[in-house]
Length: 481
Ligand SMILES: C[S@@+](CC[C@H](N)C(=O)[O-])C[C@H]1O[C@@H](n2cnc3c(N)ncnc32)[C@H](O)[C@@H]1O
Image 1: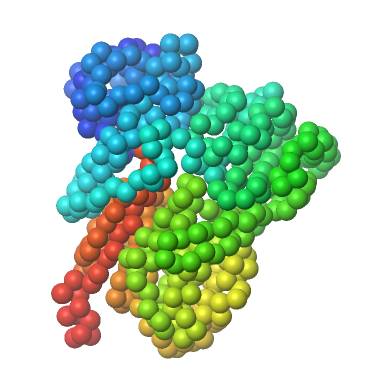
Image 2: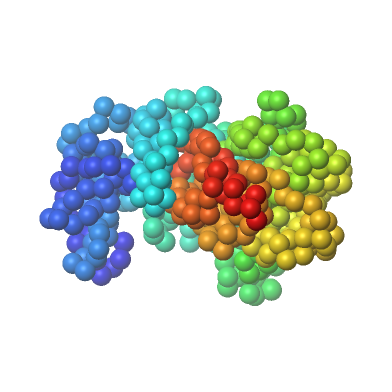
């Protein structure tokens, strides 16, 4: 909350309307829009203003009590994230479980509505998408996160941030985390000197990877850093032998992360077992991206493989490929005469991808920014793949899985120029996806199918997998060209 915010703390009684992207319901007060968190469409709530002011275009508020509850309200699954209990004890809820007070079935209905509304508002398209949930998540929506990041309090305890705030609240369990995480009792360790701690606890196996990021001042002072490293090492000596601990020294974005090993390894193993597409094992380094829900890797691989339907000898571009999750399964399907171009910007993730794909000669790991790599393919299609070309071949299909910001207009245009037969777009953000879709449609692409996967229960987040095909007009113009 901003210190100058004279309206902060004021309690408003509001009838809340539709759920908007970002996890808040839209309400009106004196003609002004108020984004209300921890409410459900149709409810009347008392909400405390968390950001206001006469000049503000809109206000923000947290529900503190419910006057007319929705039939889909339940008691919140996580005390520290429950706005009502938090405000009653004079504090703010931690972020990250803003749907914990809504039944799982209704959360999914709301996600479908948010996706539909966002596609209409930004994408200018009517898209109906079914929501697929993970059965084991029912009914609570708890115990699914394999990747958890913590802030650290001034006394060295693991903590979570209050929504849109630097305020941290110490935690002693993470209800959304997989059960292995609580069992480690990392809350009892003194992490003084650290700014952030990230913990990866894979769904299968006992390996755990803890990455400790020092405070900037500590990282900048070699002697202090060494002292803290010695202390962290000592304080974690009791952890089970399969727990690896590294200190991460961040470079610039996409620059290499230097990892100082305190114990164990700088990476862990992830096993992805699918229905119908086999099982593969992946190496994922401390700084590498991995899907967060324990069942997300297998669910998304199955969705992408079903949507793409890769055939032997095809050329497939896997853009924003991370450690090669989709590339690995795709390479197997296209066989020795096919090609998978696995494009990823992070050097660490590309290193992992090279290891994960080393036995598949048809897979090329290309480290760089997607738009530049495609630009090179378009400019020099005859050049060898190792030299930034396509070896005279044509890209048959594209899968892209960009970060939350989406691909952006320039990259979408280049993807279109590849003249593939199919694009499968995996997205974790409906707003950037709607923007990218608008540009694809302007270029002549049509949506064939779109499905929402509820891979972030008890939060407002969602994952979508959408198949695009060239429209009849686009096909015609290609034939003429
Ligand atoms: C949502 S993750 C998907 C990774 C992979 N498909 C998976 O499922 O494990 C997005 C990835 O894109 C990478 N990335 C971000 N911006 C990029 C860019 N401009 N070009 C290439 N890769 C990028 C990130 O480093 C990250 O690994």
